Picture 1 (tube, rainbow, N blue to C red):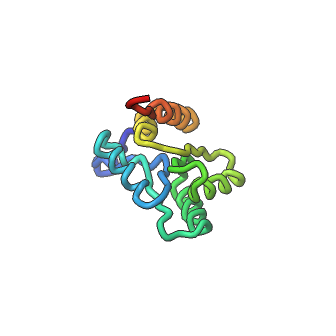
Picture 2: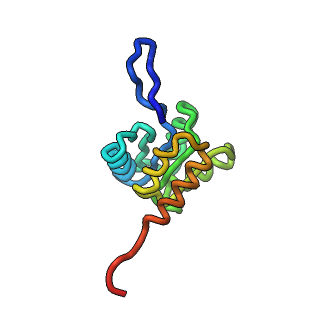
Picture 3: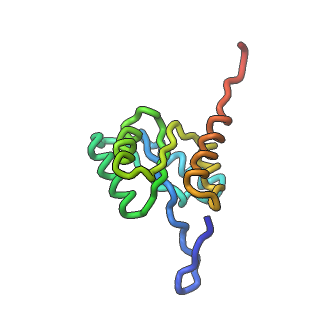
Length: 139
């Protein structure tokens, strides 16, 4: 995503396009790795579920979506508390997109899909994440 210049001509950070939500330091760690590799960590907002109830997670996610307009969410586990909260949100707002089981390859693919629509970018990201998983060693 391209940065935009403010009225003074200075570059501003890109607008966040997605939320990374999950357990512990997962969201911040994944975004930190994306930033180190690509310099595009600002594409994501982090939300850890640490110390939050299911309702607290959903409230925070709803607030983030409302305040930022973000409609794409990446989570760590398919049945984790953040995923369940987003699935409840999707009942009210069918335009939201959820990618579960996100890994670093998933997030990197998303940041480089800046010209694609959100649905296409999320699908390509999920495909890349799945393709990046392998088990090596003796069989």
